[in-house]
Length: 300
Image (cartoon, rainbow, N blue to C red; front, top):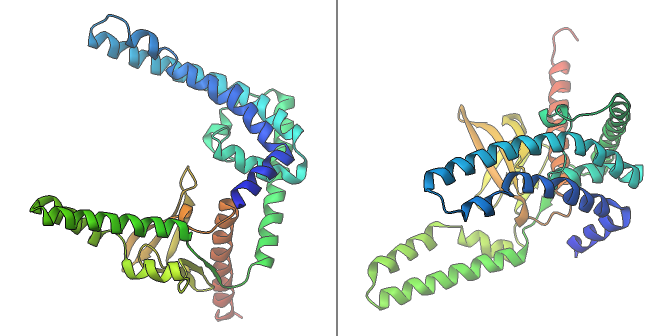
């Protein structure tokens, strides 16, 4: 239901229309530039090495043309899209456009390569300043509204499906063992026993345990394995390009560690807001630590 609501909001605010325009006028031509020549020369009666040369040449030339096309057209799309959408929804438009691979996050190298006239650069600069203001307002509002502890559960449908697949493969391994096919039977059985944590799955399905917990002291992960990361050990937090993984970099036992959390498994309506929430909790600890050090300073 939350996915339907999000699509309805995109349609109601005009963001969906802007995204469709971007896909048709920017991403589709880019794909044609890069891969459009493949159907012609792959079917041609040529030796394999000539096909390889044509393939590499098409990719190189197509990529160059695609970059030049994007650099100009993305500015046109930005101005068109932000003129269609009300200012109160600009932050959602920006986040949606980044997920749709239309624009780069602000201040990244991709935005610098855009071709803009002086007037267009002035307008886009004003848009970016207002987006930064909206981001600060969003963070402040989220900070004030968020409690010091928050728990997130897993989607039970995904857990039930995972458990059903484990039972299916367990039955398959038993079948192979009965048929005296010990290699396949034991191999599948070992995989079923190694992958996942069965007690945790049952707890999470019943609702007796949380999958992820945020608190003032750290981040407690309960699935697929139990990991606790104190904020003082956290180095950086990021999401992958597909917004499917939360990637945590931290120190443990004087070693650098990395922990990934599958966001698609969690009950989260807005992944961008969830990522902002993680950043807020981390900044809360940093502010608390700074105040603590100042209070302990001998100069006070």
